[in-house]
Image (cartoon, rainbow, N blue to C red; front, side, top):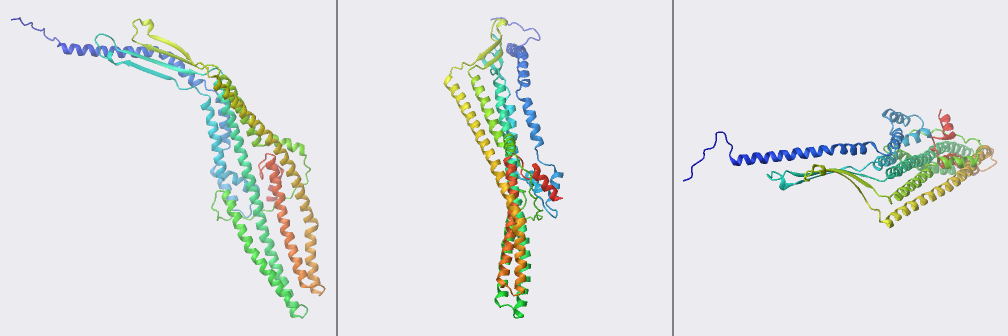
Length: 491
């Protein structure tokens, strides 16, 4: 029988010693893993610092963002001023155009498109996020024969020199084009608002002229009735006056409907309820007698037109994209550092590395360059086409404006005075029994037609002045001498 060996007091059982040794191994492995991560910590911080600080296009982004903020929506106080303008006794064209540009949602939509293009500048000029790799040998955890095996590493992709700047240049040019598109939207909307205001002016003045002629025909009817009762006219004369009066009252209904339709369209541009009333329009400014230099105005249009500038900036963006595509023939690099605890010799555990791609797909890269060059040439051709169109629009607008001025001069100096004299002469002749009453009615009809045509001619002249502003790259109703003339008339 084998003698039993007594255990010393306080001795640990074998299973407990194994658990303690395993726990010790795990803790030792974790400490070594943390130590390895600390060895890679310096290079990781350097990569993160490089990623945070070397962002291309920061100055371009700041400048674009400042322009965007300046073009932001109006303050509540300014909106309150606009509301007061829409509730005054009379509405002038510059105030209406300004209110449309501040309230219409089309402007805000174009502005947010510009904002999205600005946001892409920072995206284009930034590094990719660094990659962290963690791996562990699971069978080594808690092993009594080997220490815990693990590997930790960090890597950062670095594009070839100049690629990031070119990518940022593409985004900056496209953001500039988006700004030009925003400005073009403002000018188109201002032209639409200006034309609607001219139509509103014609509708209100037509109502006023029609009301004046209703009063005139009632007076003529009373005169014809008196002449009939005195035996100096036939019964047909007061009946003819009554028929003309009926036509005028019918026209009054039509003109009222036309005015309400135009007011609803104007309210739509103002982002208001279409049934809200608007104050009557103020008188349109008289055309100036300035002589315009066509060549100078054409040069101004080529410099100020936002649609031409947008095409040029798109061409610049495509040129930068073509230059970046040329850089794709050069490799991109990946720098890395890692620590591997499973190497026996400590000198082999910490590793640094450099990787790069082999740009052997020449056909794909050549196609990228060709695509960008084709797009650039397309936008350059578009800029040339828009420039030709701008010069033509300036010349046509000048010719039409001069024509409208000539027409207004004829109305003011000849047609209106002759029509008024015809009415006076026909009335005097009817009272003296020298001409029939139909001559009086015809003279009244002619006067009404001339007065309506005169108001339409004024609106046409004002519209062509707005079209000239648009052709020059100005904001119709707000830029140039014509807007100053409108403000003087408004006062």
